[in-house]
Every structure is written in structure tokens, then in C-alpha cells.
Length: 573
Image: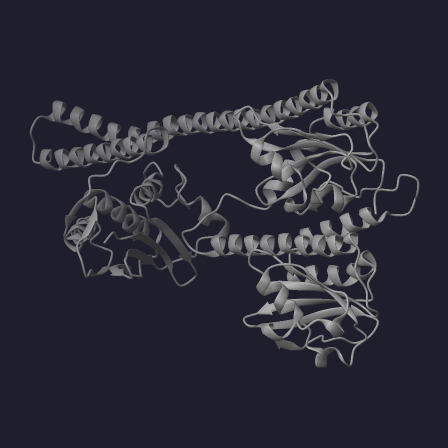
């Protein structure tokens, strides 16, 4: 079987390619099974197929498509059926006549049409299932039929591993405290990046015109994936952007390892590739593929062309042209990444410029009032001299100076966190309950009209920056007093549990709108303005930065009955 450039009907190779691409792209086992069920019989030319899933020591025949009933829904010990033999021995098995092969449990076959069978394991290195093909007469399957069965099994392997990978990503993203930067959508970005290079369609056209070949593509190649990013197909090979081939079935897998071009004019007579599985599987005679390597030395993928007929391509002119085109594509990809980095840098600079403007405006506004109070007090003392009101004026002036000192401290913390190297810590083992209770007592003394309830239960000493943690805690409590309902107490709790330190501050009052919660920890955010509320709007931002410096995080929940800020950090043993 090979590519047929003269027929308008899909070639067997094109049909196989479409089927393996559909299987490889499947995102659920049901999709994998259904695609195999609906395509395998016609591709192989057999009279029945079955799909088997390994379940411990059992082989579960989960689906079938045949001229007569087989074993759908039944389970058999792996040691008692041919699918189990294929999985245990990790190899394809062909039985031309079931009557004379001891591996066949003949009593199970007696009521079926089956007289010959071929069975290929799915994921050879660690089998999870198998695909079986059956014939109603004694029959020796051709090499094409066996390789087609194995290609379907390889595509199913890719799908199984991809489904497992996506499931693990999903678990990582839903598990608290974990993240993963790698995502299946990364390949969508690669396809989009190639589509954004205006020269690629011209490159593919020139490649085919120059070589006389029928199919050319730019492919993204990783350790486990081969993905078409863009193609030009004059022979019905059937690959479109986003389609996949099993990586093990391609020569690009080898190119990724040695980073050298692979070229042959005619696989039939080439000493290196005449017995290679890739030309045999896909019916190729001529082939050229060169690596696309980015400026930083990263292997990205390949520029390749194939055909069912021999072609004169293994010469310096053609190879040089392909290498030039591959370098051009790599340059464009690198330029795109550099452009994205530049845009990100410009966006960061714009954000910093806005922050500086906010910083100057808010700081000027909030310093003006205490400065004015100090100026007024000084003027009055100079004018009136010492009077019975002088101690009160001095007390007010001292309060204003303290406010300015707090504003400056917040500004310095903001500068360290946002514009510098981050908030620094001085870690020590000490009594955390005493540290936090002292912070609560200070706030209670300053807000004698508010009811604060505190409870700390720590079963060990904590190695933290006690002054910074007290600052974070004080900011959270002050926020609760400022924005909480005065008639409800502020509840303050701390405990250690399961190797974790947990501190929480809760208050009653109106719920925080859900859309506002992600913005609470941004700098210069003051929430709803209340009469008499002053400050830079940096308290929660600085609290979150202190939490981050400790390897922890502050979580927020808010309802009509309660708003709660909870800090959690792991404790080292």
C-alpha cells in the first residue's frame, strides 16, 4: 500500500493517517475506543476487531466490530487468552490457524467465526490493553495489515499517555498550592505561531515545486508528540494543522536526538532505510527532514517533505535550501518570542509608571493632613507659648508624626516588595502566641470601642520573622476593624495543624463583591471609602507580600454573615 497520486479517493495511507491522528487527538478513552471500533476493520481488511483493556490480571473485552458476535463485555484471565499473551510478552502475535496454536483457548473460539487472529498490545513497554484483528478462514496477514494494526495500537498509546498527562495537569491545577506551567494549549500556541509566519505557505510551495514531492509540513516535535503545524498536501496524505502521528512511527523522533537532517532518494534501495519501519508503515519512497533549532539551541521541530515515488533530493542544493528555510522559520519563531518579551516588558514598565503616579498622588494626599496638623500645632505653640492646652497640642502632634512614620514605613515596604528584591526576613524561633497577642493588645488599646476576641493554640514554636508576621497580622486586624460592622466582634485565631501554621481574622458586615476579591491585595486599593478612613491602601498588599516571603498565602472568604482572611504557611520540621 502506498500513496496514490492519481486517484481522487482517499488512499489507504491517507485513511490510516486520519485514523491515527483522530486516535492520538482523543481526550477520553471512550473516544479512543470508538475511533478504533469504527475504523480498524476497513483499514486492516479483516472481518472482526476487538478492543481489550487490561484490568489487573484480567483482560476485559470492552468493544468489538465483527461479522458475528465475539466476547464484548466478558473478562478472561490474562494467562488464558491470546490478548493476555500479547500484553505479557509485550509483542504483536499472529496466529494464522487457531486450531494448531497452543496459545489459543479453543473452547472460547468454538462458537465464533474466528479462524485466524493478530493481536497487538497498546503501550508495549507497559501494556494497558490490546487490539485484535480476526479472519473467518485460516490466513497469514500481510506485512501491511500487521503494521496497520500496530500503527493503531501506537496511536492508542499516544492517546492513553496524553489523557493521563491532561488528567495529571487537572489534578495539579485543582490541588491547593500546586501549579504547572506546561499545558496542552502550548501546542495550540505553536500552531498559531507558525500560522503567523507569512513566509511558511510560500516555503512549503517552493519545497514541493523544487523537489517534485507531494507533501510538505512544518511539525512541532517533542519527546512524546509529533504535531502538524502547517502542511501543503498534493497527494491526499491527510494531515492538517493540529493532526498528530505517533512519535515512535516517525523519523523526526531520531532527528530530535541527533539534530541532523535525514534524506533518502528511494527507501527501497537505501542501505540505511530500506528496512526501516517508517517508510514501510507510510508507504514512502523519498523523504527529507531537517531540524528547526531556535537561536538559544532549543530543538523545536522539523521541516519535512515526503512522497510515494523516488525523488532526487539527497544533494547539497536541496539540503541547503531546506536548511535555509528551517533557519528562516527558527528566526521568525525567535523574533515572535522576542516581540512577546518586549511587549511584556513594555507592559511592566507601563504598570510601574502608573504605580509611581499613584504612589506620588496618594502619598502627597495622605502626608498633607498630618503635616498640616504638625504645622498648625507648631504655629499655635509659637504664638501662645506654654499654656494648659499645650500638652494636648503636643499629643496631637505626636500622633500626626506617628501617622507619617507609619506611612513612610508602608512606602518603604512597598518599594522593597514591588520595585526591589522583595521583603527581607529575619527568621527566629520564639513564642509566636506572645508576639501576636502583643499586636492584638496594641490594636485593642487604640480601638477601645471595638470588641476583639483572640485565641491562639500553637503546639510548637514557629521559625518565622516575628516582627514581620506581627505586622501582617496587625494589618489584617486593622482592615477588619476599618471595614467590619462595629456591632460585631472581630475574631482572631491562630493554630498549628498538620505541619501548617494557620492564622485567621474574621469580621461581620456586608460581603465583599466576588469580583473585588482578586483585587484586594493590589497596592493602593482602599475598598469602599468610609468617613475618617485614611491610609495609602497598602496594608493588604504588604500583608500578602509578607505572607509570600514566608512561603505562605492569604485566602479570603466573604458572605453576608462573615468575611474571613486566613493565612497559611508550611512549618519546617
